[in-house]
Length: 488
Image 1: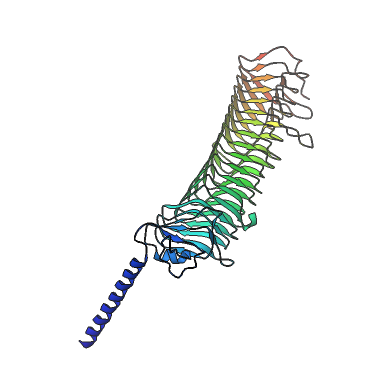
Image 2 (image 1 turned 90 degrees about the horizontal axis):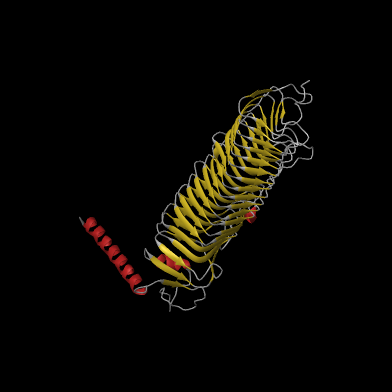
């Protein structure tokens, strides 16, 4: 009995001491309004008021009740912070209020399962990780600069993050690490700038992401990489001077609307299970390809593509359910569209200016190998090679214009098969249609204009076995050209 009374007495004393401590904290804190922090404060008293500010951010956070605002004066704060509850950290501007890692490595600012936290008008600098977020929703970064982290600028796991009007700079010197990495959760990213922000500026893994009007330049590999079921939508913005593909998706859904993608190794790449949805984009000046799909699917619509590089403006391999519609492809490099073992529909595209390679090959608007194609309503003009060259492929070809090609308007070779309806072949330097190497074409309602220096319809070729042409009703040959060459 005596022990029980003693334990109760001790517990009462402990509770009383805690209540006294809480009342003291409440008396020392300002009665209302924000807490203030100023690194230059030299006074003995600090209660968080504007007259008696805290000197350190840690001190302010220890005293800040949930939902409070902490106003941080201009200055440099060499601290590591852990935010455990709802609070707003408001600086004097990203170039004026600086939270700097006190040493190499480590995390500078940690948000740990806290909801409704905001950072505004400040910079987070150095460390291995600038800001690490574990869980939480309603997390907002506005006018925040994350700079100089060696590994990751912002790392968020299973969190809901909004990042606007900020910047991510010099992460891993632009050749290592990640600018912003999302592992699950969601990200809204608006009006921000990335410069040399890691090897990957944005890595979206199993997360949902909306990216609006950002400017990304100078990452070692990619601006945006979406993987493992991520869903990413990109609206507007500019993506330039990345060392690899500016936008990359693997087993993820990537939607691009109205973006400018320029001067990268490749523009957009969908790889192994990706779904691309590209519309109204400008994709120019790339070293390999403007858009490439490998074992993927998707659509490219109403976009402008130019100066694509060593492969093609659009390269499609081992892919199905691909739609290319209403695009303008000009000066693409060696090929406008290159398809290998794929199924695709090309409708209403304008392709011009493909050039020959150093060996005098290619230069085709469309080149397909072992493909299943629908070509409808395209205008293929002014290409140095063929308008289209199809090998071991099957195609439905209707309503297209094959004009001013350096070689044939349409070349079917190596057992290609095509049905042609209502197409126009005119002013090609080779035949309007060449069917060679055991290929087959069925023609109905096509118009063959004059092909300077060659016949309208060519069924074979030098050192090649003949092809088969089934001339059905409604084809016209005006004016009459030379007789078809004999097959040998």
